[in-house]
Image (cartoon, rainbow, N blue to C red; front, side, top):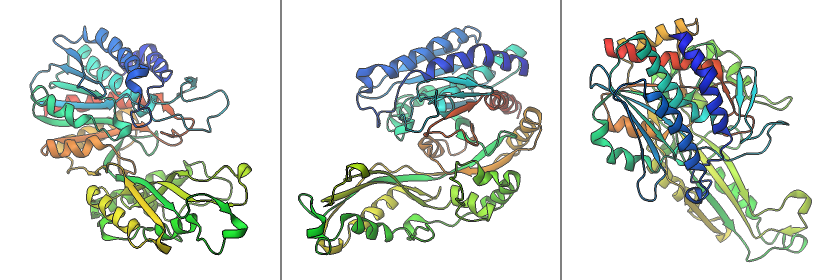
Amino acid sequence: MRGFIVDLWDNEVVPTLTEYIRIPNKSPSFEPDWDKLGHMDRAVDLFVGWASAKLQDLPGATLSVERLPGRTPLIFIDVPGASNDTVLLYGHLDKQPEMTGWAEGKGPWVPVLEGDKLYGRGGADDGYAMFGALTALLALKREGARHARAVIVIEASEESGSPDLPFYMDALAERIGDVSLVVCLDSGCGDYERLWLTTSLRGMLGGVLRVDVLDEGVHSGDASGVVPSSFRILRQLLARLEDIETGAIAGAAFNTEIPPARIAQARVAAQALGDEVYAKFPFVSGMQPATSDLAELVLNRTWRPALSITGFAGAPAPRDAGNVLRPFTEAKLSLRVPPTADAKAASAALKALLERDPPYGARVSYEPEKAGAGWNAPAVAPWLEVALEDASRVAWGKPMAMMGEGGSIPFMGMLGEKFPKAQFVVTGVLGPASNAHGPNEFLHIPTGKRVTETVARVLLAHAAR
């Protein structure tokens, strides 16, 4: 079975993903004209072309491209099995924007294969998911092994927070049926040496904070000391939320108690990873992580709230800046919140916190974006834990590890509510230096192959449980 998976990846999956990387099919939040440009349709056609050819080896399997008015498309694949006990496998094909800083010869839409790494936007996040899921099913079919009915859902708005997916889930509810196992291949891995099961995902909320102090810029020598700086006021407002010395986020709306089991798993993960907990990031020379306690770093990344400023407006580039007191400062805020926090309530609390009592009477506005809920996995069933441990030891040669992820997959919270009795396998290929959303993103091909084998083994165990 492994030989089949490896051959299919080498001969078909990697070449097809190489073509996929060339397509700049940015998510709707980053490309409002996605439907006119046609890049999303090109990506869908590429996926459908490959999958349709493979479905000929899976008797009774069907594929459709669902298109609700005004929504991004969704690929729906239905593969019959030995029982109607349904497994839902999830992935997405939309991408993050370009980002600067790519190494020479590389780029977001320039696929580069270097050894075991395929560079370019979207291969690891999350283009490989459909190919991995179908390859696992094809491998089982080739071996004559049993598996339950499998439904593969590939959406096209995940990087925008999956705004279109709930509408498709409602429209396809009868066709999907009751789901007992969800497999999501859009997550990360602590290293490339073992299987990593994602146990939680932080929620995310954010928006644009703007501070206006003048109708137009004025000479800084004339106004400074009289007109408070919009940037200083913005700093004051952010200090209501974030401790400037530690980065700790204040407020009950943004904090929750960490379950003891997750603390224990963080300690095990920290021991397995060692310094890779932080060394995977491209620190500048002399820079240190937030703390030297590795387990605390894992918990900071997976359970505690944290603020990032991801965009900035109202200021010229330094080389273009004159002696002018600027009329406004605008910042894009990204606040990660604990998996069990109420993201909508936290978003409302953040708006109230920032807009309350503006310093000096400045014009302060905070426009929130849609808040994304986090997710905390249910307890792993004994059969699934055995299957995952077996898959890790056989495919990687090491025991499995469990850890939360700092990012968000909006789909998971929704699925957790829709299928409360389902088991979840959330894993992925985004390991050290893979740099999803940033420059030099890559897919670690051996991990993609091993994740595919893991999916096959889990489907086999699911059918036999």
